[in-house]
Image (tube, rainbow, N blue to C red):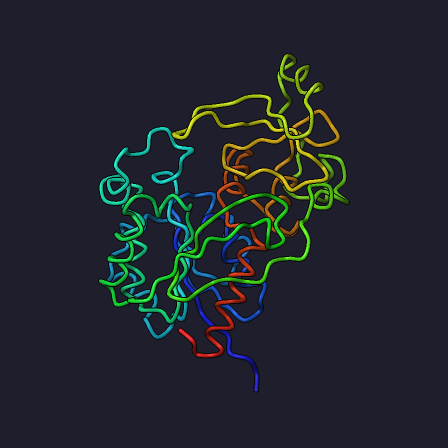
Length: 326
């Protein structure tokens, strides 16, 4: 008997890193993906042509419209990554009161729309990815209350480190779900050198998204030549203080967290990484194509769920579905 293929919806799908992890198990079929950023939707469609992709605001998708597109019995899993900007310490403009970040911030309210859609479809399993700060100072209890309101009394806040699951860069995220998600850790870390191995020089015609990166201004280039591995060329202010950028990568370590604003200096050359090199630090295969301007491509890479981590999460979801343990 052939194995069951489970169907899922991806909300705030971005370029599709989270979805790719599910597809790589060969047991999931993406039915619907929604994102309001044009180039994310185009990128998603280019890589997952069989999925219905809506380049729309989730707020504009009423329950009645969604039900015309997809019936509840056609959906086994709902995944998604609502914007983390209202919650992250890297955002100096976030609301001072943590509860206001969820209920008053327009972007924070999008998390409530994720919960609305979960309540509409009542999937066997849901998984929502975000920054751990979404649990700060009463937010966790608010989220528990919201999920209970739609019928999910067991909710788990699974904090995972991407670098412990085969990703060549650091990233700590919480996966909020109605199942515990605790995949076994990888036996070894994947280093920057291993991640970038085998790529031709920037501009090679047969590697997508590997165009030569922007050149550093002369003064920054001069400073970059003197940087030691792990040092940052510049710093900027976040809500939690000074944060580094333009970090020179250590080839023998995992990379720092890749963000939409992140730019890294190559470990062996005095230049920035290409989009493809940055995508490798997030575990994307070279076959995955990013569409849009260069800044949009960097942003989509930095805002994605790292692919190896997404796959580990998907494997746990698959196991629970097969066992009927949800």
